[in-house]
Amino acid sequence: KDGREVRIYEYLDELNTDLAEYIAELSEASVKERGVFAIALSGGSLISLMGKLCEAPYSKTVDWAKWYIFWVDERVVAKNHADSNYKLAKDGLLSKVPIVPSHVHSINDMVSAEKAAEDYEFVIRQLVRTRVISVSDISDCPKFDLILLGLGPDGHVASLFPNHSILEEKEEWVTFLTDSPKPPPERITFTLPVINSASNVAIVVTGSSKAEAVHSAIDDVGPDCPTLPAKMVQPTKGNLVWFLDKAAASKLDGGAKF
Ligand code: 6PG
Image 1 (cartoon, rainbow, N blue to C red):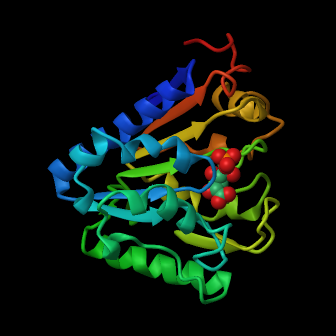
Image 2 (cartoon, rainbow, N blue to C red):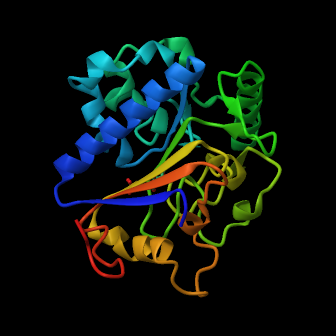
């Protein structure tokens, strides 16, 4: 498919290096073009897979002061809770590089899931207005410079789970759920229109437990799972890159090619 690339790595170390390189390059291009870099993070294994960004040369060469950080999805727990995606990113990345604290847009953890989603959409609207976040050319959706996703063994991305009604959301940018099959149950998440409006989307997947979901999403198999969330990640104008280790790629048609 146009605008889609699948990168497969034999060694995790290579994946980590290439992912850091990819993010650093997008940051540089975006800062050059519009003076800022608006990046949205997921939780899970992604943050440690991005760890090389905190090391040389990236720790020194990336223009961290121009980064604006968002979360694709967040669990509705206190910011210092072990389940918080904010805490995960802070401990694993943001505290290790010179990010401007006021550029870190975490979710309000003092309110209900519904209110947190509403507040977060409001924050994003303000920043679209001031062009910290670009706007899509074809809708009024925010156009993040980069959205980073992980993948669950069930094919979920962000907090968009298979067969959930949120997959049909067309109006809201940020929504909430209280019935997440993966704990904790209360979460807020970007919707598909926002993910698919990004300039760049990367889905980073390691391990054999995800091989089947990777196969379904990339090889486009089966009318059996038309609502596989990962398969619905199809940027309208942007680029999609899959970063896979060989275990995650092991069930792809033609096997793991690297
Ligand atoms: C979350 C994450 C979620 C994650 C996937 C993969 O808050 O749960 O944002 O969408 O990316 O579940 O997680 P792992 O990489 O840890 O398997």
